[in-house]
Image 1 (cartoon, rainbow, N blue to C red):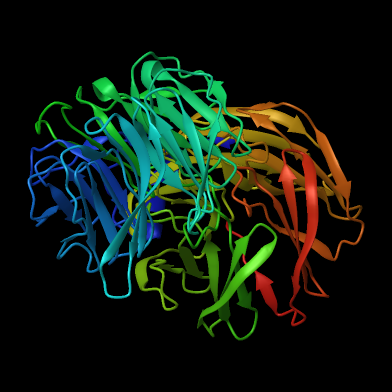
Image 2: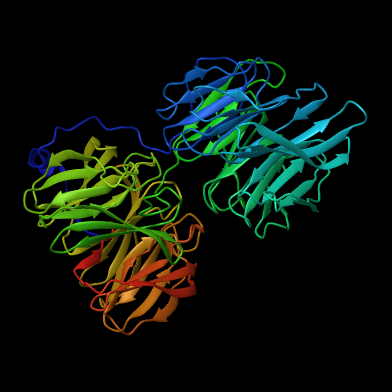
Length: 637
């Protein structure tokens, strides 16, 4: 790519943008930071119901609560000095906490906690707790006392009069202990023991739950279990052991690369997960557990619990006594799932009416539309939706608006309501166009890529929510080169920039580190400019964005799987000769960590989804038909 020196234009462009330049911020993937707490007690469990609200529990009857993402914590009154080992909420009001010798329940967000047990025998001990609903929870329990060592599962069900019924199942004489439990719904659960056992629980909501052993291949302690759904799950244990299932039944060993005892594990989709354990250990994977990478925690105490919505929070502290209690927090870059407005790690669809300006949201689950919600109307069609990235790092997509005539910029921040708040950001000379959005500095928040339509200047705004942290000139490029997409092609959690020459068909990749271009590489030339790049997304699930092509007249669909700046293959997918069908999205609609393809017919209004496994189309499914063709699907830049 040919470029000219940026020095002569830098000050002029700052004046054109009309927003004061701010100091640049350090780029790089967000690390783990230690939160300020109202206690030093060991914390054994943490659970968040949203990006802002969560609870943590620990020794000496400790329960603490945050409503601002962990910035501030307040202590709640538990009424006991016993140790809590687990906490889980089903919504902002209803939660359960306990294990050990007691189980507490709240219906008002923890303002008051009620002891549900009449029997607090010192011979009974519950090692964990899982709330399957506001009115039911399970605990793996055991006794080393009278009459002999025994273990079982306890189910706690709220009765009509508000009392709680405790029922014991699968009572077994055993010296081993059940340590953790996880449910995917009211009927299906898994539990693990300190003797390498895995217990599958079925029909758990009925009067006769069933219990079956699954093979782990281990006799050492299994300490934590997490199930993403009824088929995909992970278990961690002593000596760095990690197991995985892809069918809910059979477990295979993964290589963690460490021998440290691991205590807990959590995944946010099929690819991205964390494991924590002794000596401040944190491991991360972006490929479902095939490879694990250590992260720096900054602490040396035991880390007992990890929970991820966004942010991710880890709870820890000394095992023997209530000391060195710690909560760590990080933001996971959220560029992996485009246009996810509900935080379920599945892409959704935004519609806008071309003349009336109505905005609608389709919530998606694979190829099924689960809900359609009217958001609001912006009748002035000079206003255009130019981005669908996550501005705040809360795991939910927001909307970037630009007035093509005045140059004004607004954000609609997605707060779960049908009338999202709107925030004015700046006014920019309309000669500068928004040509991309993505997380260029790896802080979990979407940034803005600008280009001058006439002279080719390239700028990046690094964003913190609706605030530009910095506005940095990158380079000036021949306007014949167009930005055709942004995506993380080298798996460093930072979006890169894909270019194509409008005449010669050259394809170039800029690897980015925040606002710094670390390299520019020619990756291929497709002289037939009928081939158009219509998507940049991770189709193969390896954490690296790939390039999706379609021929404008013949309808051929191809994918280039990428490894950084290397094209691994040129893979033909299929041909859709009716060019009325247009590719309007390449998001992950079924949450399997692999981008799919969204189609919309320009005149008939049909909507189809191709669910993809890499370059293989698994299915092609009609979703719905919107015959009023003025309704158009919004694509994120």
